[in-house]
Length: 178
Image (cartoon, rainbow, N blue to C red; front, side, top):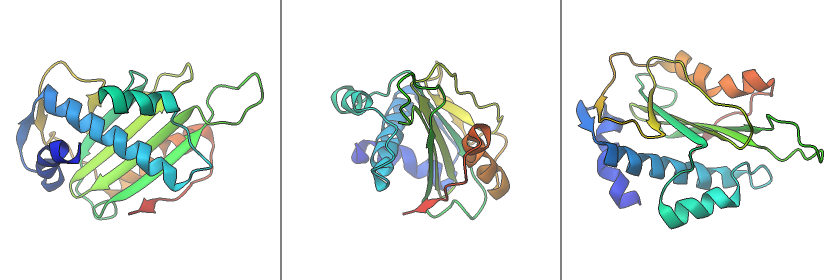
């Protein structure tokens, strides 16, 4: 997976203009999903991604349709050196009273690439209305031209990364720098 994703990631990280095929977007989405799934285990007592989704990734190298992934051209400094920020929470009340998270929201920064991945098993639809973000999962129907006309900076990246905690009224959890 790493070998297949590396030539797709490199021009994104360096902000190089190019076109990304839908096939490459599927590979990139799979790599991002795997990275989020592995990164979540930095806090093993707060796992939000169900085993069924992990098994699907392992068997089919494809994320479920409940996931959404966006990428942006990032031109700041705070998120440049591989930063990861992960929020999770419960959107829908559980009739059993369980507090097990049903939603996760992860931001990753690497060089000029900012990634936002989100998924939920709740009835909520996750949207991103930021015009600098390009949705890559679910897959778009056409190739993606890179970079987009507008980039994001440190303030906007922080705002996006904190949006789930603001919406859910959760405390800021801090970023995980790898």
